[in-house]
Length: 182
Image 1 (cartoon, rainbow, N blue to C red):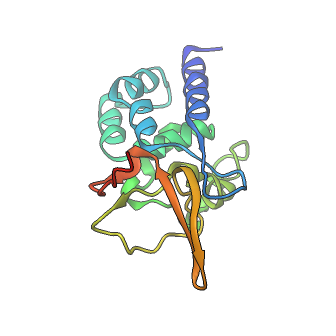
Image 2 (cartoon, rainbow, N blue to C red):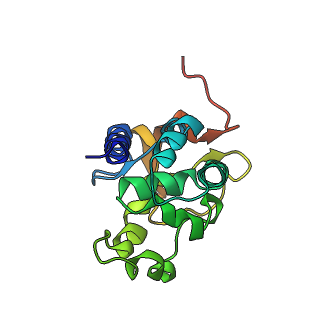
């Protein structure tokens, strides 16, 4: 086994270890917290993997591109054993989620790869748990999004619904006011 395979295997294990179960549903919905994606894809971590990947030319340019534009995609590709060199022709993190119509980008290139349709339909959502902000407090969530709730308890119910108190993964909060319950 080469060092790159060893580094990627270690990276995949660290991604798997960082996954959290969402408290929102009883179904098995796991997500990778934003803070963990950030630490897993630090410049140093990316550099170590990229430097040893023989399929990547212009490693410094590629490192800059991935670190600046595609850290979530890098984590997804590495976790699902897709060649990270393909990130050169892919979209950037700000254009996620990947629509089903882009299924052809990888699925047709290599039969041995994971079914790209499955990655699009299911797998990418583990890496795309939403961040919450007081600015966009009324935005619509995609039904596939996995809510990054650490805990949840019912605090009331009535004619029009049920009220829950939830603890949101801290790295998924942007400028949201916190009510001190202490």
